[in-house]
Length: 77
Image (cartoon, rainbow, N blue to C red; front, side, top):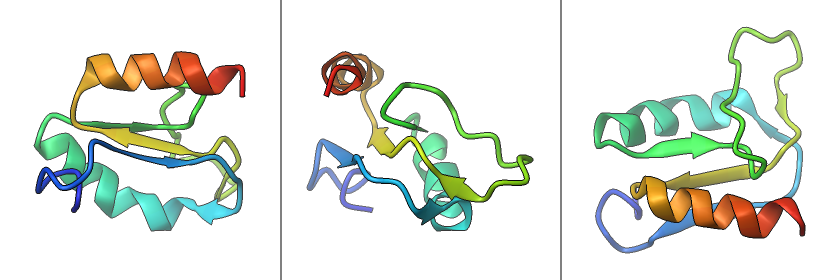
C-alpha cells in the first residue's frame, strides 16, 4: 500500500521464507495500478508451483524502469 500511495518507491526483501499467499493479494493490487512484483532476480512468481515459499526474495515497484535498475543491482548482491 505504501508504494501505491506514493509513500515508498519500492519494496525489497532479500531473504527467503515469505509464503506466496503473503504476496498474492498485494501483487494483484499493485498490478492493477501498473506495478510489478517479482523475485529480486526479476522472475515473476508462479503461484501454481507446489513449493509455496518465495525463495528469491521480493521486489515490488510501480515504475518498471526502476524495477529493472533494482534487479540489476540486487542480482549481484
